[in-house]
Image (cartoon, rainbow, N blue to C red; front, side):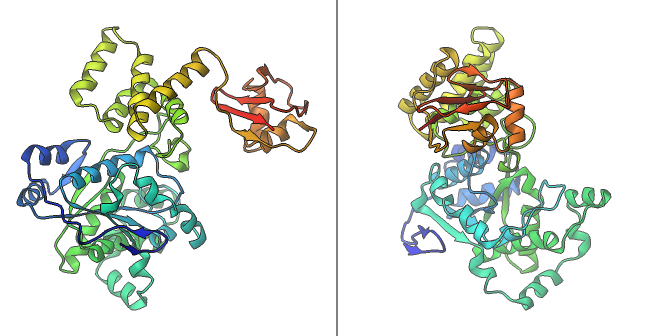
Length: 415
């Protein structure tokens, strides 16, 4: 074990694992929660040879949290791990400064090195919720890019044409809307592709929104006379809003390290139409088991709320355990069914003796601004000691252990 940048480099070359070539397990790997495999026949043959493959998954630290959407590729990596293959978890601390243009119709804000370091500091621990992290090779692409100069960039870009780089659908739409596409964004897939050369990976996985980058990596490998990687694309998880993909940018996410009761509550808040989508992508239940639950709902043997309770319990159980999942369900019923306050409420210290209610909500971070606080009050979404607050001009006397509630799930105790 050696020290890597910002994190421990857990990979140990002496850890030898026999590769499992069971045809049923390989078929499950290639089909379970999978969208597309390029080239499926080629990858299947390689998996059957018993050779230990290097499987790459890259993520740019553009935010500090991994969420349930990230669990889909992480679980696929876990399947590769269980068959004895080498997982390579690449943190794109260099490419994050550019920002991946995939699925974006606007320019991404360029992050500073300080922001990137802060974002990625807990990535490994969060990924360890799913992966056997001691067997993972953890890498950072600044390892090589900070050593490269202008000559390297000139060589890399000279191998490709503008016509090929502009083929990305997002770029075409932006150009139609007269939205700029920066030169940095154009070379992003070149750099991501070159990562695969440095890491010598055999397989790369990613969401369907990453297909352009993943396929382009094969072109980069070909230009440098390297074997082309096989690709597995995975479905994107819809966020809790039921509209956009789960992303911190959209505020519609659930963290991998979310507190059990909070995770349970957020899952219970998803639109009913997402229940089967979440069952399929976020639980260990088989297709047969999920279909059985669905049929029970259709036959009115089970109502949708009971199905959602089972979903929330299954997900919390995966990230914690059965006992904690049961406790989270009990807490949910206590707050939403029995209309009681949560058994555990975060505390906020307030020094003032009195505050305008808008300032109080902002100070306790129950509202991001006074405008939001006013909107919440006008919508009758704010309670203090269970009394609905309707006057946004009201001066609140600060009382010890007073409980402020916003919406159904957010509680603060004053100390």
